[in-house]
Image (cartoon, rainbow, N blue to C red):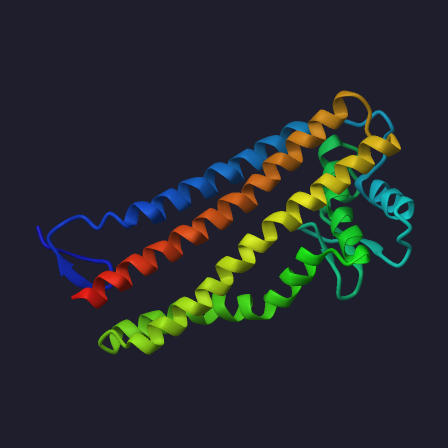
Length: 239
């Protein structure tokens, strides 16, 4: 049976490159399920010290000599983040006022980003410089590629689209050391300052390890998409 595969031209065989997309989706779903499971598990485990996520964040920042970062509450679920533009550390509903191991772990991770920013951590600077290009590439790369295909496989448009998509992939790759380093910094302070005690530290490691895997899965998915693009465009050029 004839099917339209790849860039819309007929093939009489299964396009194996779809497996790359499927692998990326499976990795993403697996990682997302893992972080939800770890957070839900340790969100029911209260810390001995009884610090909320907000209190832990303020304590870590002060201990690191950072006094110009505001800890704020944002509505939502695990949309916690540090914004270097206005030096705010935003903690979500399940984190800000919770005294759980999971909440304190997430707060410590975001403090890790604030500490990176204060210390001029190079990968964080590189990621910041890539943000405008990556945002633009995420919006415009696929439309350019599709327009190039509809225009009779216009190689210029497709190449520009792939280059922009590559910038998005690069952003995801640079994000990996930034996120891993932030977690490592947060875990060291949690353990060294006594905010967490005993087995609580192991719980924090499990929460942040699961969170880190979501970034790994995201980067892997983007790489697989780029690989598929390159394979299909190369095959089309040969024709």
